[in-house]
Length: 161
Image 1 (cartoon, helix red, strand yellow):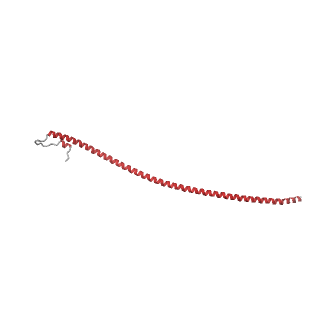
Image 2 (tube, rainbow, N blue to C red):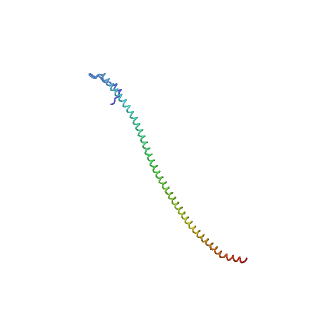
Image 3 (cartoon, one colour):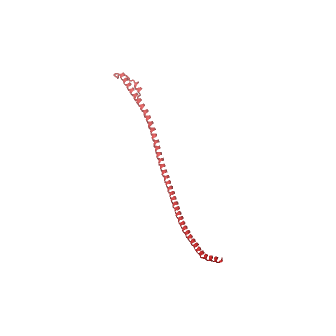
């Protein structure tokens, strides 16, 4: 059975012969009641503090869970961004390599065309020089023939005068 401090303080006892000194019993019960009241207040205070601490603990746990969730989400996002970035980098590198190969191939094709043009120009020059020499020789031959013919014509012309 539970006794409250006020019940202890107000408790009365039957008197019997040779019983306890009622004043000592009352004084003792008053002290016990005061101590019990003090303990009850301490228990009430500690219970309230415990409830506050439990609420704080619950809030801290909630915050901890929120932080853990945020960290987990941030980690996932970071990993996802890293993966996406690596994929984009690979695509950019592949595109750059493809463009470099195209530029290299185009440059080689241009170089081949330039070499072919140079070769064609050399052939044209050689043919032009050969034609020029042939034409010069033909003109020299004509001049020689004309000179051989012309002295006869001059003499004939002189004879006519």
